Length: 277
Length: 195
Image (cartoon, rainbow over all chains, first blue to last red; front, side, top):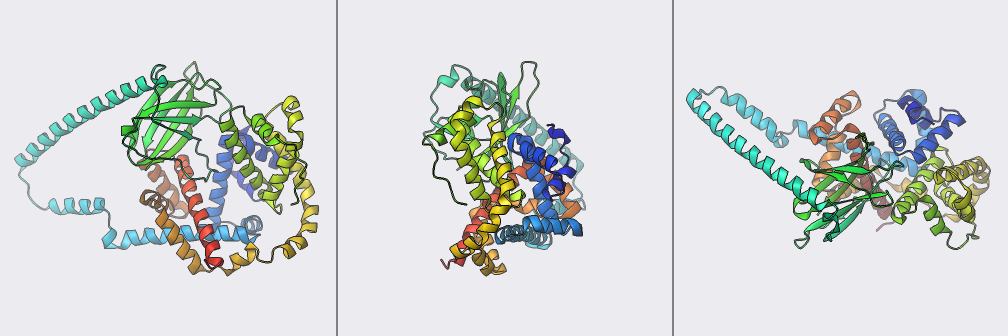
């Protein structure tokens, strides 16, 4: 069974009941056992539902869609709820575009700059300001770089063999984000007495690797730190990483974990999410 | 669907151990497998997908001790094989079950769903949106703000700004929307019951 042979077109035919029994069983088996195929099937289903709600399906596909996704009151309700959410977003989006009260700060800034172009600013003053800003920028970026290096070193020490023996103040078990998973996002409660946070990342792929690399990002901010050369637990089914609690301020965090083979090749990434409250 | 009560004691633990030696991972796999099988029964237009999923686990539970020692390959494929057999059997059972369900469930969900109005859905939507963080609300609002061709470019740009891939963004939005939908369903059920 080769998941590469499952194209978007064949997934759509599958979801609309337009495939033979052999193809149906092949796709269903992949859906059960292969995480990337699962995500693709569910993504294709999401696209199909959106196309229906946007009235983009052909008459024949629409009929088949309704047979499969609207033949019970419960399914009809789910579709109505999905439609309500899309309609709300479309309506709010339009209001944001037309209501002057909600014009973004960026648009106001752009408008301000346009008006200022009409004002003559002495060239010398502009150059001085530019020099001052450049000096501040260089200083700030050097400081940021130093802070980043210090953090990477601290995290590397925490995740070394000796560092992992240190007892963490709190820990959280995370499973990889899957398109199909809709359960609540794990939460970490921020406490002043917590120094070190341990995250146990469950590895769902069949292949195991000698080391792993985890990139921690804060959603909306960007990369926070990368933890390299992490060894898996003895059974290979999970990876533990430790982070200083002070860097986990309130917000949503995303971790991308990849297995690294002996020749440096990397596995498909698994993503995890949690929030700090 | 009627359940067979002759399930050997301890078989649940054996199923978990068969799925994966690590109990945490096995627990996750068990929950996921139930969800996936229910989905497969739904795709095959079977009545009572949850009941059929229970039946798959009951049938496997009766054989799991033997299977652990003799079955080679991914255990989930054995569960799938049992599910396929049930899908073939299901049409006959649908015919005999319909009338029973109708008489057994005087206040079934269907009648509650029919009572719902657009206004109730809107009230519940706003109630549930308030329960989301502003970050999640903004994300879902942005994601669904455009339609048809325009949405593709819009979502690509959103992913770029968030420093992630379109696929990852889709996963994130799907999770938020799932939570939102569940909240709305619960809210509508409460309204229909007059609470």
